Length: 201
Image (cartoon, helix red, strand yellow):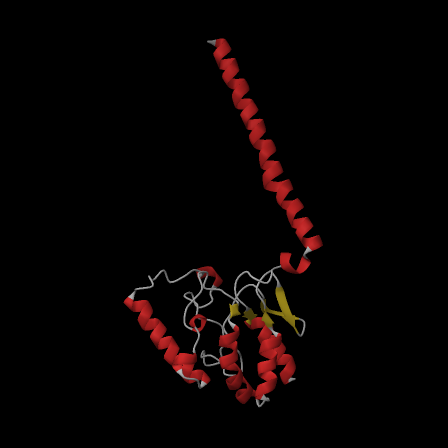
């Protein structure tokens, strides 16, 4: 009986030591090492890919945001992102979880298409899919070049700019497929709007 108790005590003590050592190594040392390496090698990305303008942070290149006026409606002077199921609230990220055949989703898409077409002065047939559908995260910072393109004339008019200069800006801000064949070309809305701000002076 005593030998059994001693053996159990040794096993419990060994397990407790292993737990303590592994907690320190994997819970403290490893995260600190990875964070330190990331900050040294990729300081911008490790810091959240923050974008600054006039010495203040205006957003992240990784997280979408709204570009509304004081009235809470989309501001015609800025390029607009794709819709977000959570209204670009990082605390409520996620998709709507509506099925592709959901009558509610189909009605939302129909309403969005009409609204976006009217806002940009284009026919509904010119509105691309990403303009009316939210991403899986609801925080996608990118839009398709086609969606950026249909907004260019509206932005140029609202800012009194040459439309060709704004279309060129869209082209310059378009990122090609990853490694030349993965995914689709994209435009980062925050990057595009910061370039637009510089163009506007």
